[in-house]
Image (tube, rainbow, N blue to C red; front, side, top):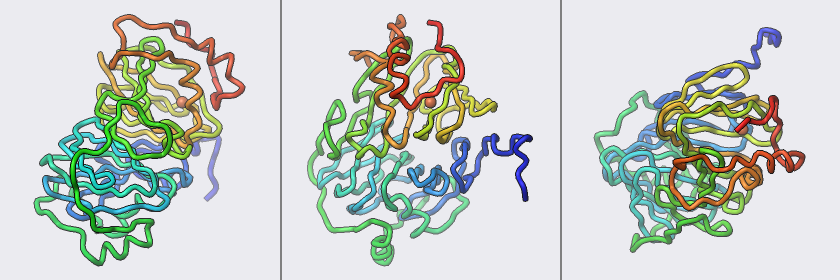
Length: 345
Ligand code: FE
């Protein structure tokens, strides 16, 4: 059937379903197809076919004891942000207990596995570069159930064998003491953990940005950062020609615009904004925190132009300088197309 572009068919944001092609879409918290896999309920937020092959994303939920044994991916780079409960994550044979908003970067080749410790553990998993994020659908079973499984169900030997076709090799290995813990992303693609609030902290105006993953940590496949701020003004409407932005609300409330649609985001809500989509956001609650995941990871120079280093861990009591002048000076080099004037601050 022909699409009527005048009616804006191609400019609608799809809501609560995966689109199957690279278009803007919004997943309200808890929505998405689910799989029961190794004692976890995994809710899919993004598949390669929804993102132009840039990434997979899912929310994993499990009760105490559910685990994924030690394994490696050859090509898949992964990142994990714990949302609730406690997750014992093993990296290269050492276990670390992660709580809410703790972050882990798991580049391709890293030996890793996890066991849920909290009775209501949930985490966001992000995968680029390979099929490692496809395990739950490929090896699990479709489920309508959206809670925490009552029984611990271990990964079967057959599932472990089948995983080999999905860039995933399970192996034997023992957990031991704590893994490497950093306060800023290290140079290069090595595994690391950032406790909640840690990362490279920057400031611009009344918003505080924390880099969780630089482009150098992900082979340029993505960058990730949190944005904290008070209730504020809408940022200028703009679009990007080369990179996709994803917004995942962690705390507070925000309004987003994608094309001409207005979308309210609360904690757990996810908005996918592919290249070419005019968009903007506004923070609405007294205190807000959202995670941005940008793929490919080429937009880091924008934040370096806009922001200054910052010693604090939250938005400031009084706004800092807002160096949009530096952004304008570098605009030809940045993947940023403004469709309205810069903010007056
Ligand atoms: Fe943007």
